[in-house]
Length: 526
Image 1 (tube, rainbow, N blue to C red):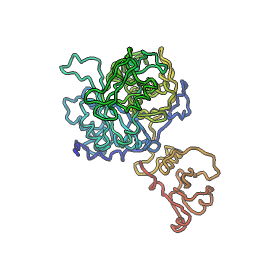
Image 2 (image 1 turned 90 degrees about the vertical axis):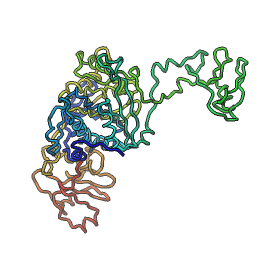
Image 3 (image 1 turned 30 degrees about the vertical axis):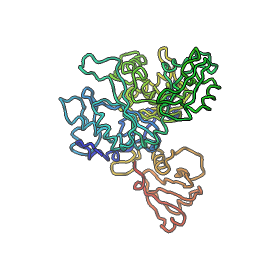
Image 4 (image 1 turned 135 degrees about the vertical axis):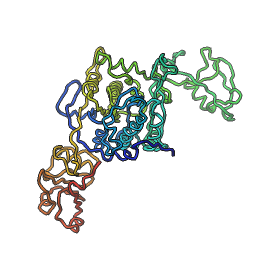
């Protein structure tokens, strides 16, 4: 398989493993128009911070659980500015850190920097995707070929799903000889066969619905007719049809009727056959509007169907009643199309280049339309994460101008302290409770929820008949010994106990199904 090489690749292939794990600090909740100090527990999240570190922070709760990811990363056209500041410990890459990447007088390393920026983020996105998950990435012609080669490497070439072409403009660019009127949405799955099983049909557009008529006042309502012939020759599908108007039809050369005669007779009895107003036309079969579950998507999305960049700007302008600071924001209809195509109520969509918050806007719109419960997670590193990204979602929830609010809730978080210090020890500034939550999740892949119990203060919880204890004290060495065992009250088939030291013999622990884990050495790192 062809692979892509660039300056710095060997240093970033495993960089996601070196990214520090930071805890998420809750700033506030927003619940149907009211800001609160408490978490809404809605499942909707907006995170402010570097998206590489934020993706790492999501792993304990969301690894392998995200159904759909949409990202709109920098296109690296040279006409945009984006900061490459990943903390890669290598002199060649360090020389780039903190630099604003733009045209830079035809800087050839601009593409290397873009690939170095994207690679570790894509690795973490891959880890977050569920087995039936899919990633949708907006990109233009500048980096689309490089992006696909990188995705082939991370996801596997066999897991390529589609290259959707989106018509982003309504008319050609008068300034260009050949103006770009499209962008790409590259789609890869964790496993292609799982993606195929989970693709949804798209709802009928208003234009498609208008094609359903009812010229014969059929009591079942509007319908469309389709050809009742099929290609080929099948003897049992070559019968004659007598129309109500008295005309006889046989299949044309090279074709046969679509169904055998007994099926045709049943369709006719059900009023599903159409012979025209005079009832003597070529037989056609009716399909009723209420039978159409939707239509299959194809890989060309026109701006009539999903909107265009100007529509995206107009949306933001109407929300904030001012000119947009974003040059090419995506219209919410574009993201709604992706949501229709791939997620159902209860599924989560993650957007780690959130920008103005279009993804959350689209989720809230659809939830209002069908009373669904889709969830969103947004990550935005820029300072406008609260003043624009979160503020837009607040206004969408409450309503703006003449637009009715969607309702809904979300929680706003910031990246906090790293859980581990540079020397490998636990960072006590994050608080013991955050450490306990992290440890329990690394063991069980389930969140630690507060529950009443009669056990000691170091009991974390019980999962799959294993009891977990985290014997940890600030500025004090803890020891697993018989005295500590005497304080344990929970009965289980197995015990996992964290402490600084252990005085129990290996024979005793084996006999009583006790597993000792040393702090901090045996705490799993993400």
